[in-house]
Length: 98
Image (tube, rainbow, N blue to C red; front, side):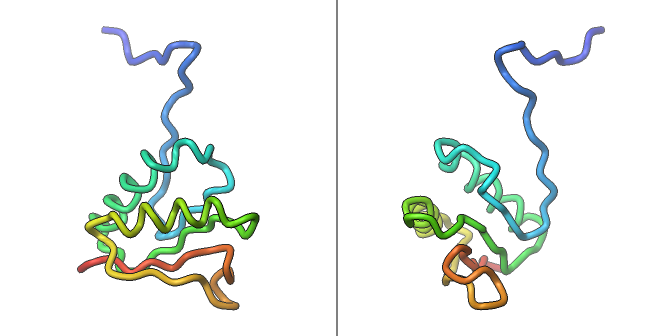
């Protein structure tokens, strides 16, 4: 029996460890709508109640998209920009439902 072989055009899926921190610098912003809900589900399933998303400071476009997706998530109870110890306005700290 042959194992799964990804097509040459399609890269293999990336497996992310669930640490409660997601750095979006390595991701294509177009993938955000698919990535963020799955990651939040996994964080919730692993019992994490506070997570941090690093979106960078930039122009604020990515931060705005992240916040819009967070406001639609059933797992999120609150969010705030990071403080001086958690990334300042280049990161968002998210509270998840128990």
